[in-house]
Image 1 (cartoon, one colour):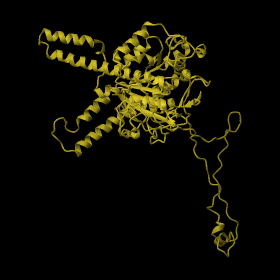
Image 2 (tube, rainbow, N blue to C red):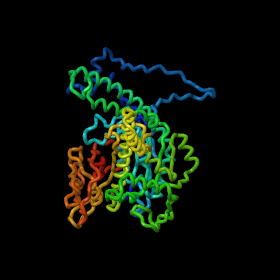
Image 3 (cartoon, rainbow, N blue to C red):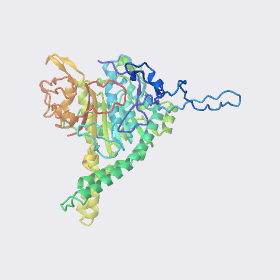
Image 4 (cartoon, rainbow, N blue to C red):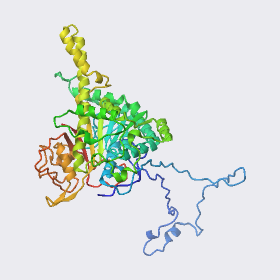
Length: 577
């Protein structure tokens, strides 16, 4: 196992930068160079002829053999003294240099077993942080200047960022700095949740300052984008002839109108995402509770409901590991040294007050998970993120099914709300249709009564959640195939149907297209990663893909943190099939 990045003071970014172009300013001192000598009144020895001596040209131009005149310098300024008679030294003004902002993270450098890797900071979290801080400022669903395979395609203004396997909390901090309306950090390790909560509380003043500066730039960018849309619409009306085709309005197409409506929703939350009060939920979520997804025994809504009931009914978990547990739970040797579980977090009172004064509300009680899942369904845009979660084949199934269940739960809740709103509008149209129809309408409205309070219900594409996975290809030697392989990544890609032609992901083989699990896996990509093959699943049934997605191009992604971005680091954008 590679050693982690360790406990470092990660340099985040300078406040004077924009949200789309990130730079680091170390020293901004103006140049103080001056010419070593002045050649305006002296002859150049190299310009003399062969039969002339150095200085003969100067003597030839001089009318008399008088000594050369000396240049008169500037008049001496009067000497200034203070009240005590001491000299007042005139010092040169220096331009103020902006000091880069730094996050202080607390993690562990000690050698830990595989169960406790969440207590450390890994390179995948740094790549996820770069992606979060590189998203566009506008409220549109995509960046028009981004290429098809670019990683800049998911604005976070007004979005709910839900992190799976948050670790020490670096991804949550980056989401807060990027302007997310609400952030939820989940993990199954109680010690990691405790560290994440403490890190968030310790860095609350810096995060609040970054959000305020981001909000000012966001408001300015929103006004500029509105002017740009008006100018583009006027130019389009002047260039294109008026068409009377059905479905096309004069001066613009239906897609333009849909895009304009989609941009209005997130901009309503600019006040909240640009420096106002924001809530951060730190909750315990076990991926192994979602293993029954896809077996036909229960739907995603039923599984999420059971998880919520269990979280609200059972007491806070303990650090004891005598019961069964997934490999990512703490072992008995490390459980004694871990702090209390996150459901019973007792943050320092001073840190909580300081965070609350900066508009950052930390929540780690037992109801944090229930409130977070409710907010996930109500948010106009939801982004699920995960970093360094693909490293063990035993956890891939739980991670994939947990993410798929949460995304399906959000889609189902918003679809039910849309259906209830549509049926509610139909009740007014057919009020006198008869008692039978009215009874059917009433029954349908009762089933969806708990989802009618959703703030903004857009189209299906806007309601669909997206999953961003930052991972590192763990290359080992495969005895079965006698070559290098990444069995953990190949096993995870069996749940993904890779889209062809989607940026750099187009060069990746479709490992999970038709229930992958054979001998042919992902080959070397354009980034120069080591070619690997899937280990296969023997005689097991082929897996059914849960996601469709693409591999994002990280070559043009701005590097915000100072770390080693190895060729094995990958970034994937996944959506439900």
